[in-house]
Length: 261
Image (cartoon, rainbow, N blue to C red):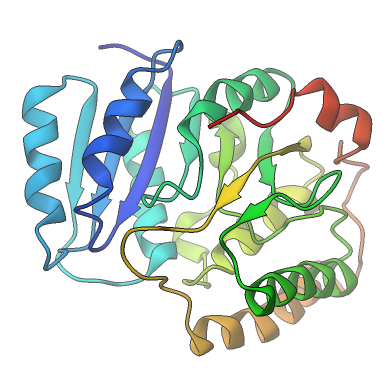
């Protein structure tokens, strides 16, 4: 199946989720291809990925020798996409915390933007199945990132995103330093400080029901110092080089409400 949109899903021990997630993506009213980037999952996720590639022409698998982190997995997937003719490159988690039904909204918003961010906090909090401590950590991290870097986005750590090809080509993937969830902050900051058009759309985030969270103290620590490095890279400026298109209530509404699960 030919499509100008690719959804990249990094996986590590996601055997319960990957098959139904891929099938829901392929059932969308818009045509997408799917790339599963598996870090040699010991639970057999990679084998299931190969089964899906054999069954569905729109599904591809990229196998990595070992677990090297979220950032390295995404960079490998991004390079795979850029080596082909995809115009829109989406990234999403492999545990159903991101709703596949939102993909058409991302693609719609990307018609007028270089990067679309799915926000859990645009026009209210939309998080399901999180303990209060985890929610407060996420909200505090978002405010910390905005304070240090100057980026105006409500959810800079979110992992549901859509890049236009031209924007992703501007990122030197070999130069990406972060490898945990702050990888999301770094890629967004690189495009924001270039003055790229970035919009946020509201999403509903549902924490995983199958498997276990991969958030760790080292990932949190990485994010604490990494934003200062980004500020230095931007010459201690908390603004983009030219005024980017950023999230507003009107833009969020125009992108449509989150999909009903």
